[in-house]
Image (tube, rainbow, N blue to C red; front, side):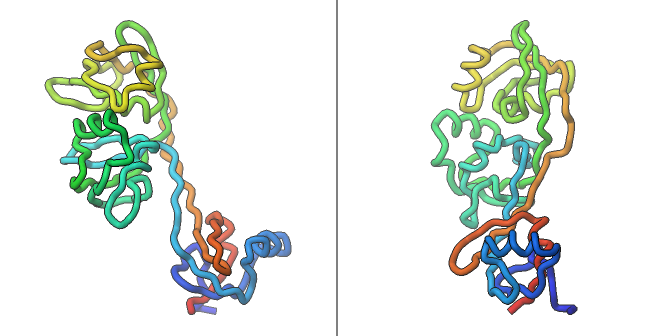
Length: 229
């Protein structure tokens, strides 16, 4: 039937018409109350990302760790972490502590600012030399280190290999300070970066079934054929 589409591409209220994959697949979906003939409603597609979020702020790239992005409220009743791509206005940073907010202000992430979500950076390991000692940091940790480089402020994650700078500040610096000690005003140099894979993304479908919200993976949703009602 031409009007059938997979659940993974559906929106709004639909009727389940066909389930592919045999008895095992049917049983798995029945356990979620998804069965042929059932009326269900697709509420939203959810995206689970791996790796910090990349924003375009005032024509420059900024990396926002996942834990911080999920506490930044943006227009449309979403968090910054839920934004896929495109421009969005930051509405509130109230869920963040004072140190985090002050650090974000320094890289241009402020309430009322329109920013552009570009995507998610890969999970990589940065090896730095700081004040003569070597440290390995993930992309989120590296993004929290703000350095002065040729008179401007940037995140350590944007250093090129063998490039140096001076640590100016740390975004929400308590955890990193516990790991690295007091590194403010210390010289920092990027030695190497490993694991340059693309950021991973998994998509799930939120479906309202008999008044209950359930989330199913995209692979499972592609086995369910539905008709718009």
